[in-house]
Image (cartoon, rainbow, N blue to C red):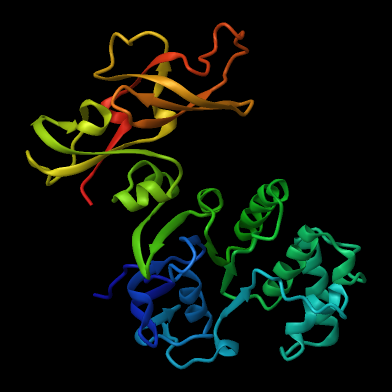
Length: 368
């Protein structure tokens, strides 16, 4: 009987890349499915771009191998791989028109001139630049140049498109709009996209799965929801979004709840336990700012309630951010959605005495 289990489209098997004594990518194993929009997320120097360059063939692994669609890519040069890469700088030819830039990679394809023109026209339509074909790059906005670079990368119809910080040069508003354009194009074409980014929000919006990288290793892989709500370590919890963390030790475990003595916050925290945690274990308790309630009076129902004073607050229209110093001296960040038009007297204000509270299910118990 043949094995009917579908094979991963991209398989990175124990890949390491060293530059002299420096290990940029450290024994990474990762699989990516056909048609995924996958994000490699991490800070500068974590190895994400080096891994992307190895997928493209610009770098060769020191050890391990990369398989694409069942074929070993060892020694296969970039121009023979079923991939194309879109660079952060876009790398457009300034002396060429938009049409010439998009069609540049098609010159050596087995196509007639008419077929090349048709492909370029198809790409212009795909990225909504019909009518811009005769312009030069300097006559375009940043967002339009980004779309030309995307069209050029897609013109050769690669099986995989690699994108290195594709939206980094755009301003915030344009970047947000372009994120959805990228998602729509990827969904329409069904091509596997692998995106490198340092922007957590960008990865969360774009990707169906995220790999969080740090110092050459993958620390966690999962859906955006899984990585955000259930980080596997202190590093991932701190790197993805904003979070409050307290170090402590487990005093007691009852059913699915653990009682953690957390001197930093000045009391005990009750949190849902995780497998393998025993009494006496050194742990961290993490809670997202939006999971914390802020009130002027002590809540009657919450088991986790701490008194403090508002040090700072920022009003952002749709929500407000508070920095609250507890009686213990610890400072917590709290997000509150402005879901109604409160009067000045109703708002929690600077230097107010407040109570912070959260449910056990809202906190995360971290052992690494």
